[in-house]
Amino acid sequence: MIYQRELYDIAITEIPMLIDDHHEEANKGSKVIPLDPDFAKYEDMIMNGSCALFGMRDDEGKLQGYASWFLYYHPHHKELLFAGSDMIYVVPEHRTGHTKDFIDHCVEELKDEGCNVISISLKVQHDHPQLMQRCGFEPTETVYSKYIG
Image (cartoon, rainbow, N blue to C red; front, side, top):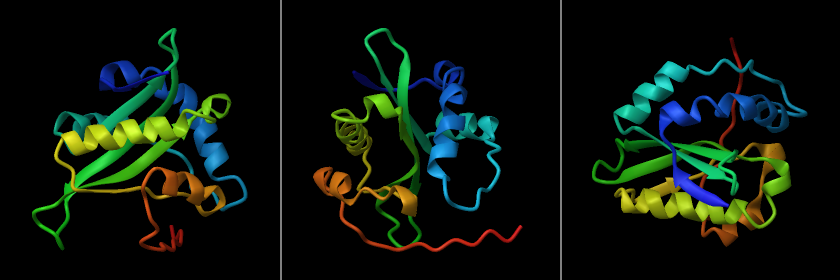
C-alpha cells in the first residue's frame, strides 16, 4: 500500500465512490444524520491549510482509504497546533495490517507539519481501543451528541 498526502482535485473524484459505504457502515445501528458533504468547503479548507487529506492507495493507484484532519490552534492552548480527525476510512478488505500503518503515516506527516496534539474521534459502535493504543493514542474525553434539527 502507498500512504500519501492527497491533492484535492485528484482525490475528490474518488472519495465519493467510497463515502456512501463509509457513512452507511459508520452509522449502522444509530440514528442517521443524512450525508450531505460540502465538497467546496473541504476544498477551501485544504487550500488554506486548515484541513489535511491523506489517501491509502493500492499498487495500481486505486484509492483504498482516506483520512481527513482539521488543523487549528485551540483557544485553550494558543501555541499548540491541533489536528482532529474528521474522517478515517479504510475499505474492509484492506483493514488488517494496513489501518495502523495508515494512521501512523498520517500522524508522522501531521507532526512534520508542526502539529502538537492529534485526536481521533470514533463512533461508539466502531470503537477500536486496541488499535488506538497500538497507534499511541489514549482515551481523553467522552462526547455525547444529540440531533435536534
